[in-house]
Image 1 (cartoon, rainbow, N blue to C red):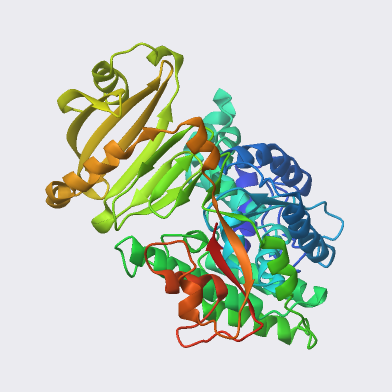
Image 2: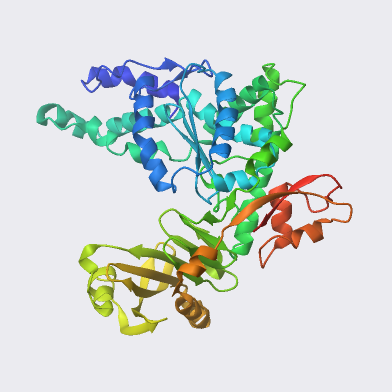
Length: 499
């Protein structure tokens, strides 16, 4: 529904007694100058929402990265852009999240987030600025306020009978819609909103002196990363399922259209900088794949020194240390999910009883049996379920680590693949082990390392320094923005992933 139609809807709502004082009409957008419907979220409410949701975001995404230098650098870039935005007096907060996922997003009220995973992909300050400028554009265009207000208004209009009842029965329909607000704050934007955020981002980039084409080059990296991740997970072609592109539906054509629109407005500067060295200096040494506090991935091995645990997934599986669990995706949607159960009520419960009475109590488990995994009491069971993606086989494995802690593996396979994956997944189960204090102390995460290309260095030789057992050259080209035929030059600074 367009802004105009929502605005014309308001008198009709008022006529039947459904409008409240907040339904006063549409407002002029501070960034675009156009009319937008934001009746259910004022600018003051946006700031309140951002402030209230910020601690939840930190908890959900592994907290803020423990790197004062890098955090200060990202904040300085963001603040320069914010001062050139259409809301220069709004207090913006820029946060680097300690998450492997390649993502960036904004909450209303000026809260902007980028992940460690996204920073490892960028190559210049201008590319970082392009990401931050885009998210600032969502804030200044008040896209969340528009989305939220539309959802509330649409809900009211589509339940007119229920609303009329609420007038007599006292039901707070607006309150009911507001209760679902948390789901709206981080929902994906429309393509028109993405184009608008890109256009505003280009405007802010140019005003701050950055090259606006960096927005396009970084989008190319996002598309390449998504394609490579899909390829490594056995799903070539699923290019929008694996990173920020899933919630930011953007294309190169749209970004070029945004740059052209900004040029038409006279917003693109001819003297622009990229800031390669400044950015590389800031990310040099940044953890890659996790850190000692949250656990980290080294190739196909997950290690958590603080919890003193380790396990390895089969070849062909891609490990990701998420914020609630550790997940690995393999061929044909085969999936491994690893997490921890630490409820007091499971203390002392036999492992077979834990499977059937707690974790798998709503499943029809078969072949529940007790096993031992590296001197730890454990249990396993299997079942078959009908999921949204079709029929899937599940294998549950629970391991008692200590009196109050149980670690869990959930293996998900398509029935046609279950037999062939049985042995590889069994090896994953029995790779789970406790680390000694000495082994935990020696375990170190991978890091982004910036090196200078020597006279004898090539893409092939530098790629061999990448600590991966698959796709070394593809990964090297990806994080450095190199096309398939690009070569490196002596004196050039590039990133590798190493110790």
